[in-house]
Length: 483
Image 1: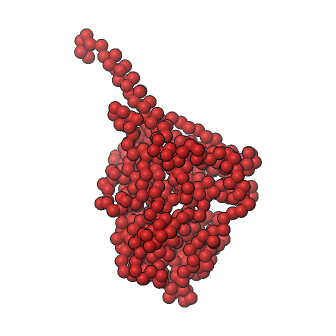
Image 2: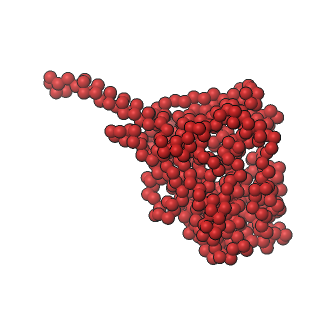
Image 3: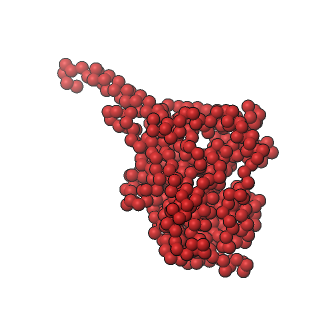
């Protein structure tokens, strides 16, 4: 200490400025920017009456999905990842439109587990496969087909992926790249060797996102990339640097879709579907809807945030429409959509997370509590969790010496990268909605997000009432279906 110099006023000033800065960041994170309000005004928020009316309509007059499916094609199908969310709906839709069970195969590491499709898909063969192994994939694709379908042309849908949205360190990139890039490469090679002439892969709208930055000195109110309206234009630019993706998952998906699109050629037409943003559709297994129902708890710093959502049903239909557009029997000349990604989302304006929370609390027959912590505290906690994870990654000796481990479960998810995908991310799927002649696939979407949520809630309530499903141990049915 310098003699005669009292440093406490300086220290106090630093603390005050720091506190004001953190307060400013928190205020920014709780603000709805005018640009977002223009895309989804407050008047668009779902009222309880509107939710109730839609829920009753869903129960009385459920959508007949068969009326919205592209016509049956005389082809055979391999759905890689067909036990998952989007892949499972693709299998279900193929069967619903008249494809025989023997003409459809699922290639996946896991068996079918979705109750909604177990019945209709019970006769579909599931080939257990490790897509990171070229030999395993080749063996699955080379397995003989029944004579009745063996001569039909082959379509391959590649929907398998590993999702780790919290990680962004280059040192952990292989955790997703091994499956999402290497697996895609293996499936592509096997599909070509098996004689497939149509190949469609599932990507993610998040490949277009730019990392969000809140810590802007000296004006935290000027957070960068807080509102992002995006389409597929990034595909026409060079692949971004690693740090320009929101996280490892987005980079891996971007690399995989470029592999798929680059493989497009005469006799092997390819395309990529980018669902955006969060995908829902399975009350037991999706990562957007089911956690709140099973845990009976919503902890969120984003109730005001506006985003697009997409049901797995709409995402599946986009894949079928892409196949129809690429079908060489109908279009001898490849259409403009060949070898390109197309973004799709639910019809209608984007919604606020609060719409989902209101619907869940209103309709679920199991109790749901809502907690809204200050967003800046969650952001600071996220940096702490990421710091701990990176410490263990960079110094594995700490695990050997002290047994220290990386965070798992919800803690592993809560890292700074997820604050980008949970900000104002607005999808522009106008290109996919164009006709095939105009470069699109004629996508419209069958139901909007409210209808899809109500439909999923009806499934949840019905299964709970029948004792087929339920929340975590200790929770009970606490209220009528519609309060």
